[in-house]
Length: 372
Image: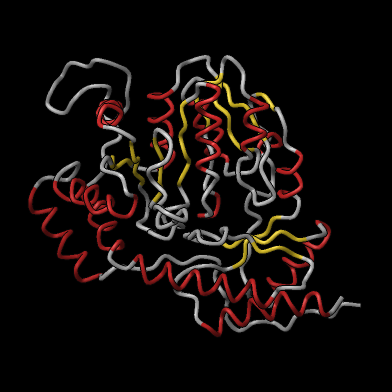
């Protein structure tokens, strides 16, 4: 019979944003407030420029959130009434933004790593398919080359949901230059945790211009006329300044996240679970550390065990997209997505975890299985 885990004196947090140089940011904030330019000015332009080397893209458009960026991109690349293919194992925003673009979501299955399966996309595509929306889930790069080939074969645009993936890399390039566009998040739970915000990378200058028009009511700043459909997606200067200061500290915490992942994967080798991560040669931002338990019945007692030990967890992606209460769309395939959803659990992963806290997480999971 399993005994209770020892009660904890402190909590190992699932995620804590890495703060910037606070004094430097406060100086930026004073300068912004005194300038009278509170939105869409020099800090937004500077942030877009500073993100270019991180993504490899010459075209970066700041937006208030990744969700709004996906809405902008889908409205620009798709058309009302058409279909957009999304993975069955992802965050709800990927699916919901298709509806905001007045399109029909089509759920295709994922591979064993939770990433959109190119073969499933090909099987799900129809004459109504206009956009394919893979996700770099948890920061692990999706199969961009294979998905590009599928998109070309079926005549669809390719839009990557890269909300988790700032700092991630394929073997030969940063995430940010694949498909027609990629959409990133810099929200509080992301490696660049700047409170809220996001940005889009566009594949060419024409799409860059179209996306910028969408983010300003379908027109251009200073012009009261509009040439198309759009929204107000301007970014506050204070948000951009905070993101710029956080960007200064991004690389060290990405290195730290990778070290933590490697310790988890090594320590839990042989346990009845699988630790998610990138393929050899790739780099993941490790927005979160997912584990997939061999037995779904183990999840609830493991969560209770870790909670008693003062270790936060989260059942991220524990409901496949078609099983969400409000789901609207067409389901083509979802078997692996449901298999993963039934076994999903996120454990602490952030740049501020100490070695002692990592040891506590490792020992907490190991002791659960040892006590069986």
